[in-house]
Structures are given as C-alpha cells and as structure tokens.
Length: 220
Image (tube, rainbow, N blue to C red; front, side, top):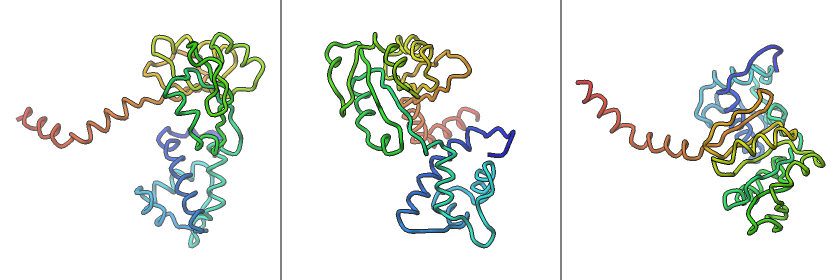
C-alpha cells in the first residue's frame, strides 16, 4: 500500500470482487489478463481497475497485463486473507446457525470457534461441531482464547450491551447483523450487515422507472 494514502471505502468494497474474479480466472487456467479484458468480465472500466490497484502498488506491465496468480496473491494479502481469523457467534438462533454452517467462511480463513446464547433450548448443543455456551460465560471465554471477531445476531435491544461486553473483553472486530447502529470506541472496527437495507434497495431499483415518472409528473 502506498504510504500515507487513505483508501476510499468504494475501492475497499471492490477488492473482494477482484479477488473472486481472479480466483475464477485461476480455476480456468488463465495465467494473465489485461485490464481491458478484466473490465469486460467485471463490468467496470479498465481505467477504474488500474486506478484501484495502483493504490496498493504497480502490479501490471504494459503490453503484458496482469499476472493473474501474483495479482490474486497480492489482493489476498491486501484483504488479510493469508491468515486465520477466529470468530465467535453471539446469538445461535436460525440465522446464526446459517452463518456457522457456511463452509465458505472457513475456506477463506474465517473460523467459528464458539457460539453463545441465553436460551436453554440451544445452550449445551453443538452447531456444525461448534459448542454453544451460555452468554454469561462470554467474558471468560474471550479471556482464555484468542478471538478476532464477534458476529452479533442478537435482538436490537440487546446488541449495544453485547457489543460493549465483547469489545471491553478485548475483541477489536464486530460483525453486526442488527439494524441498530453501535456506539463503540474508535479503535473498534464494525462491519454492519443490513439485509433489510439491501432488500429495500432492490425494491427501489425494481420500481425506479415508476418512481422517476411520478417525480416528473409532480414537478410539472
């Protein structure tokens, strides 16, 4: 990464797409690719691809393009996917269990090591080989085990208290599936996953033409 440069969130959000497309190219035994060819596959401009990647170094060669395997490894390193992340799940209900059962996370190095809940119906059980503990024991678990990320799948009225508990115990990364915003110290990294927001965005796009026509009628 070029020293002193702040990378925009838009660029960061595109990095996983580069990683996926480069992985697909490797699976097809494609060893090199130009920014033009990559742009046609990804649906973004070649100029945008070059600008994005130049934030992190000079990976392409004029007249040759990109070495797919080397670029894949570089993006993997930039995303921090060349290491393992230990994750605990808080809220072992239906949605939480879907997360734990998703093998793609483990394949990428995101490994669930424990789950926590306050329901007697799930405490003491296992989900995909992961033990579900009483949430009252979560501080003790964190103090005795290395944990990078807490995935929070708890009701909105409980998420702030849970987030404070796990971050006070030393966790620096929070994967928040609640629609509530969290108030946490600046050194805590929070990634919010708002499924309803995504669905509402989809709803808008489906109805966009009608919405714009109505807006024009209202103006005139």
